[in-house]
Length: 465
Image (cartoon, rainbow, N blue to C red; front, side, top):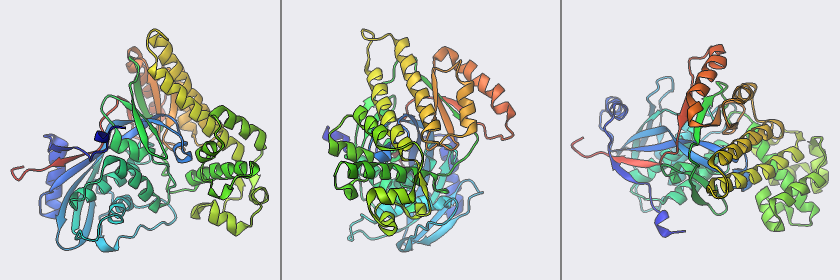
């Protein structure tokens, strides 16, 4: 990979827009000083490859136009002050040397995501750099709990802002990896997709992002591929429940039981991807191994202990997370089957995007991509059980006008993404408004067509601004 890719986030002059002016004016009003710079981090939509990044498998997301903007100034008083443009979110303040991200029951406070990013940079900051205080104002257009990466964008934006404020440049690759790790301060055992696309996205291209080590390639989408995002209006914060981490643990247990049966050092195996690499097998062989290893019925904790030949406290220390220690039943076959099948779909999606007209017509390519997306949703619904009735309804309503549609993000609510031909976009969106949103009581409709956008950047403010 070219060394030129390992650069820091680009800097631009402050753009002239009503939104940016409002952010700057609000910051000035609240903090009685002007911001020194702004950072922007986009949300993302994952086109295919759901719930497999934390298992070590590649995904295919793209950045969208919705984003998080932070306005920042530094101070000499060692105080960290956080404020949100949306006044329904409370302000927060602490000493920057005393940042503590608390994991409790329920949804974390919005400011805790900011603290994750700041702490991530402070953890690697050389001791020779003197800490400053910071004033931060947040403005976001990504709806929370919509599956478009609002939380990871907030973590990533605060890490980038801290790096820039302390004049400690960090390359985009390292920022992506660091933010994936520091978001776990809040208790979410994610895999790194959201943070990677936030920093590595390029306008006009989706990305094929792979992990361990982090690497990426531009994916040029075929002509006539329009993606429409539709919010199910069901909200789910993955840090507020055990559902997400339960799936992480089920995949980990599946990999460890298969490793033990293959006489491997299973304690060292943490992901299905790591197991596959150790075995040197292809995805199809791994899918077949799942079928021959596990029974359909959920495994009790006692069965897992018997399979691994360990005691309960050893299981908690080796395999479980703090908020999954209470779980007594694990669906191992279904979760592992989804991961390997979804990974195959990602490979097929990427290969079809690379096809030229001598291999397949554009219409055939789009049809195949749509079929892969719909198959992904069915697997997420049936094997991974992370869909929602309102997401399933969006999928059903899309069958005639979209080439394919699937949930995007963690699931259990949030958004669906549909692949639609250009001539059908308006009719498709009109149909959803009539048959889906007209029956909803919420005014928070989110329905828009999108194309690949650029990744994180810094807006500098000249003294004359």
